[in-house]
Image (cartoon, rainbow, N blue to C red; front, side, top):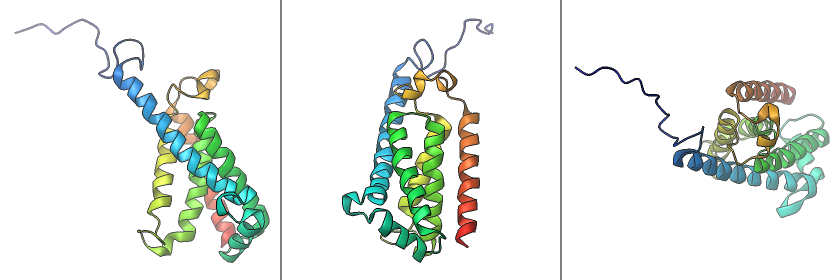
Length: 184
């Protein structure tokens, strides 16, 4: 019978300091790729609403759409959605205030899900695209941005805490719920 080992154990994904190993570097690269993809998609959609870029309707066209699907104060809601998508997306790309940026995207996409819900699951009228963006942004809120992010320069966010992500997601769900209640 062998005596239990007393040598210190290391997590399987590191070769040294926290996150320094190959899987840690892969995790950071994967989170960067996810942040860039989700952030760019959301910033582009926001720019459609805010500036009318990429074939978007601008604030006026977006306001008309929001009014047609039951949101009150279409212009105000369009402005909030445009700013949230644009700046939430850009912040995700940078990894800046990641839990809040991811929550902004999550809340916006919860509303998009509610608007499209009766279209089924598959495109072109389905919700799988919006559902994927909700899941990806919520995952980023929970996991944090990785080491390749502006958050690393902010002492309170340097080391991601799951509680930051959970709190931000709770804020997203509550805010999205209030906005949906206003929609009626």
